[in-house]
Length: 225
Image 1 (spheres, rainbow, N blue to C red):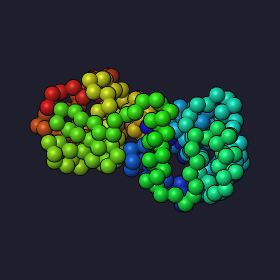
Image 2 (image 1 turned 120 degrees about the horizontal axis):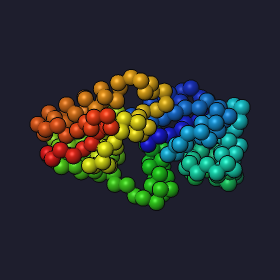
Image 3 (image 1 turned 60 degrees about the vertical axis):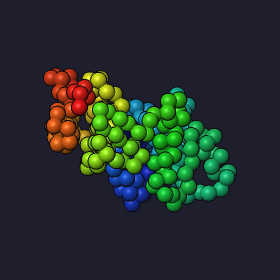
Image 4 (image 1 turned 45 degrees about the vertical axis):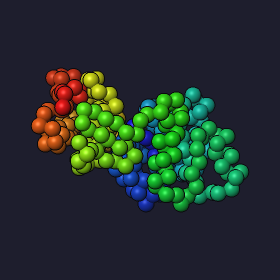
């Protein structure tokens, strides 16, 4: 899932962006409302998190303009303002949810997941199974025959994406779009390196090459375990 985070407070940016990446999201950051609007209009995001008090353009104006231009991206407002009237203004501007600062990071992730399920109309499973592997998406835990398999955040996000699309060839571009943010340099071999590390960890458990490379196209989960 690719998210846009629009916030000008450096401490909050570091905290939230790092946390979201560890939770398996790809995150792009904008530091003011105008930049956030430009990014929202030109890139496809699964969801956006927008602070209300922003330089150059406030969050409410940003979201209102995005909605006026038919942007359908689900949006959560962040604000230190706790008045009911402020929350109503945010929702009337086009936001889908509103979270008051300070907030628990776990609540932000839970609200994001609930919003994505609600907007898509599809309830994606939080427990994924693939031929001996069982993944708990919420707890970020992978088991193979009830034994814990330790994965780094990017490896977990990559495997989750593949497990949600078994027997489907997933291209490098698709992986970059869902697992890495736009600061990622597509000319590097970071995708191949991540696939290699993940493949080895899965091989150590199964003794088989679980992730198959389709030369010139991408990767697929198809080898029986």
